[in-house]
Length: 612
Image 1 (spheres, helix red, strand yellow):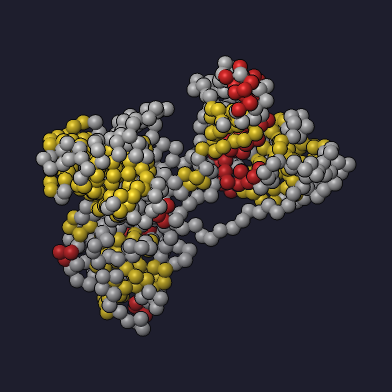
Image 2: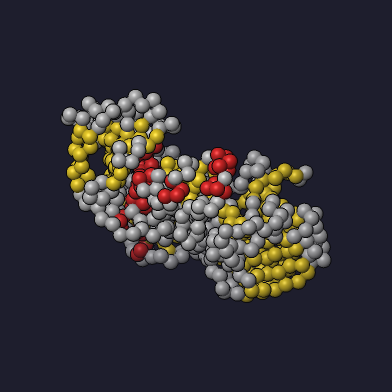
């Protein structure tokens, strides 16, 4: 088994007085001694035990050029300085909301999984400099024989296969201090210089060719190189010299088959889809439900006689390693969402409470209270409406008991907060402490079930008028602002597919051709539209002009016209797959004025991530 013993103050292995040091039988039973965030060092005493040493949790740094440098440096120096033969990254892949603690600390991340978007930062290629050149069973050479520090800063390690057939992979790093510090621990000052280094090969393949791969993790984006193959090296008399730049990672190897690989276009990030609902029937048992980000407790799929549900299944408060929420809670949605309702069916199996919340603002360590608005109902019918830890209202519902299914809901609308049980209003309050945040599901440390989760934006009248005129308005999936881009070049209304985006008359303010909806006719040049593959324009073939918001207005109900294409923000559009919304640069939707049906969620702030 692995033994993790970490001193929080020194962040070093605290094993001198442990059973591993004192008892040979315990030492024999231990396969690995691990430490978190060792700063590339380990105590001499730990090295003398004859037990493999690991950095069993490391990195935890943001995915940028400094994070790239941190990872490149510690992958080498954990062994060079600390004799640690394995370095485990936290996280490998992060797909939790970026506003949560350490939102960007991973070798890869996917903050918007509903859109299929993901990021491939430089840390992936920093890993490849070791993982594509050393395979299971390969080992590091001894210090001073292929492992050590470079004369003018930096480090190198050499790995060889168990067959000792002469193959080897030499990994060299020259990371500068300011371009490679990690979040923790602190990094003492040091210097690195550009240098020419000569390596002498003995007892390994020394005639060449040696294959060379390089990455350069520079703060200057124009200088960045990720895992590119260089010219082969041909040693002379068993040695070669290489010129090393600053902030570079170089692998020199006798092996072949490495490659950078390829992938299709990475989908653009898109905002969390609203309205959203989940009945949890599509998941395997014990799986976590998608898009929920658990902060405390355990939230997994559970089979009941009523079907599958999400269940909180930790019955006792665990021993915590940091200050966090005092009760189980999980988040979903967007940190920027403002006005919406959240509801679900809940079943308290024997005792405890169930909580629905919204505008939750923080999670993880340091969150020793729940920030946001929460409506909690207990098994005896008692209920409380909270703003953070402040009680807004409380009372008792006469028809709640254990082992019964009931529905709870919270509605957030500006400063108005209302709570419901079984679709009946229970209480209302006014508070302005929390303006936006995630939806939340919570419970006590008991067995509590959740089903039929629904999150819906609040809708309000937008009053853009009636008729066939096209404008931009705040987005709402229920109004006439969802479109279908057709193969025949037309763009039709989803709600009334016989009507297409067209041009008729002049804009009364600017004189530009006015955009309307008319009966679809693919033969009409006025209804032929082209969506840019590289930019964000919607071009009309007949008029040879671009879809444009009149006078660059950002107001709701602003008119839409055609104008000469100029690349302005008022000609920037994004077609949102799934919903069919066509969004302007400021997040408003292309819209047809429709009188009393003109409604929008004006208080729902959309993340500014739109681009084509």
